[in-house]
Image (cartoon, rainbow over all chains, first blue to last red; front, top):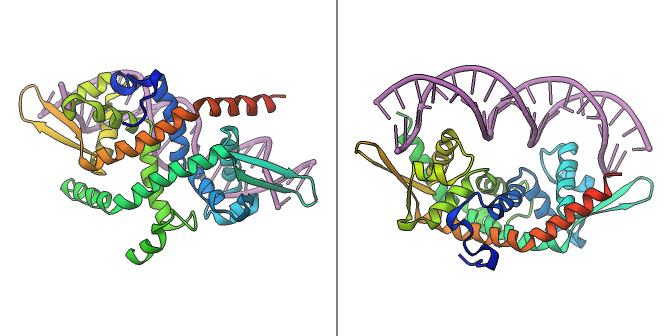
Length: 135
Length: 135
DNA sequence: CGGGATCCTGGGCGATACTG
DNA sequence: CAGTATCGCCCAGGATCCCG
């Protein structure tokens, strides 16, 4: 393992329920969240780095405005996305990744790459498992 | 899907609602799962690479045997964990990471590292957000 | 346009049994 | 020891309506 941070040295070695592992899960859940990854990915590729609420709404197939709001609020609270209100009529709100959010983009990219690289392997494993258990 | 795979290969998604992004989410949910990361992490550090059901049960604070079973079955189905039954009395079942599972360990490790590196930043962002919104 | 408020439902998850 | 079976709570998240 690459991260041998001092305080963490004995990290998961003994207890997976160690606070730092718990905190890690908090963030991992954001990654595992149904919509967050879509939002982060889109903002990461947006021309100019910003997108409006309605642009995201249209770009993410199947999301309701409520869930988009909830997702964006969560990301904003974690400092991953910033929200800029333009006091004009009609209202205009721009979202963009913060610097912190952009570093996540890198990290997520690696996970997605892993997924792409192993999708067939996973599908095969599932098929094998399912056929093994459908008797 | 190999034709599209070429188009996707360089980057994880032109459109976040693209099929490959959907499939990615499937795997990301495994990462975001409440217990999977604990299991993977523990197995990754187990002496000899294997752990028994009861060892995992004791090591993961708060998990019920049902959720441990469900988690292990999901990981086994995805080809991340392998399950070996020893036909002895009392029963003995060993779990260990597959080679595929071990590559995930690396990937997860990077995410956890990211988390460790940015936890304070996230906490600060949350505190700032909360105080900004508690009026 | 960009949300908030409300209601409602599915199923994830935990607790508590019981078994080979 | 290593699970399975069953029940029931709870809340994430979808639908719908409304507002500044």
